[in-house]
Length: 189
Image 1 (cartoon, rainbow, N blue to C red):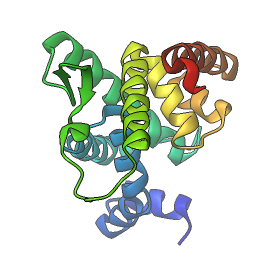
Image 2: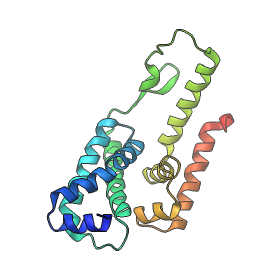
Image 3: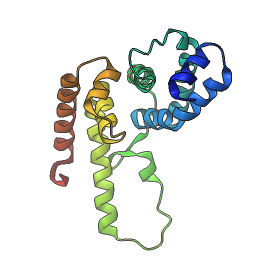
Image 4: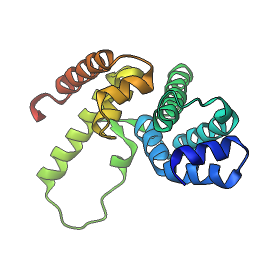
C-alpha cells in the first residue's frame, strides 16, 4: 500500500496502517528531534508527543501538503516550544562550565585510547567547544533551520513549508545562522 493509502486507512481507524506510517518515519523523527534538542531523553519525549498528536489529528490531514512536511512541522513546533521552555526554566544543559570555559558534557569524559595525538585532541576539543558556543548563540528558529539544512540535508523550500514560512525567509534565517557560526568558529573556517 502506498503512503496515501496508508494515511486513508489510518484515518479510517486501521491501527496497523498507522503503525506502518510510524515505522516509516520513526528514525527520521527521532533524528530530527535529537539534532534540534541535543538530548536523547528530550528527543524521545518529543518523538512520543509527535506521534500522539499525529494519531489524534490524522483525521484532519487533508493532503494539502505532503505527510512528511506535516509531520516535520509538528516535530519542529514541538522542539521549538521545548527549547523556549528550556530557556525559560534554564534546565541543566549538555554544556558544563569548566576552568577552560563552557564544554559539552561528552568532552569531559576521558578518552579510552592510550595513544592519541595530543595536538589533534586539543584542536578537536577547541572546535567542539566553539561549535557548541556557536549553536548556543543561534535563536531557536536559526538553530532549527541550520540543523534541518546541514544535518537533515533538507532543501530550503521544504524547510520553509515545515516552518510555515517562505523559502526566502528560510534562506535569510540560514544566512544569519551561518554568519553567527562562522564568527564563532573564527580561524577554524
